[in-house]
Image (cartoon, rainbow, N blue to C red):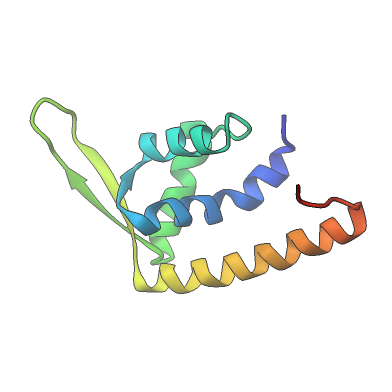
Length: 110
C-alpha cells in the first residue's frame, strides 16, 4: 500500500491527465485510476470529490450535470484552458521529481 502522502501529491496530476482526453464523472475517474495503476492506487469518494471540487474552484476543471435515459444524473468534469496549462506544468515538475528521486534511490527503468 502506498503512503497516503504520495497518493495525495499525485491526485491532481492523475485527475487532470484523465480528463484531458474526454470529460469524465467522479466514479469513472476512480475506476480508471484503479484500473490503469493495476490496483496500486485507489481513491475513495471521501478523498476524490473534495479534490474535484477544489480543481473546479481553481478554474482548472469545468463541471456539468448530464442526464442520460435509464441512468442517474452525473457530474462530468472537463479540462479548461487554465487546466491544460497547469497539467503541462505538473507533468514537467513530476518528471523532474521522479528523475531526481530515481538518481538518489538507484531506481532504473526496465
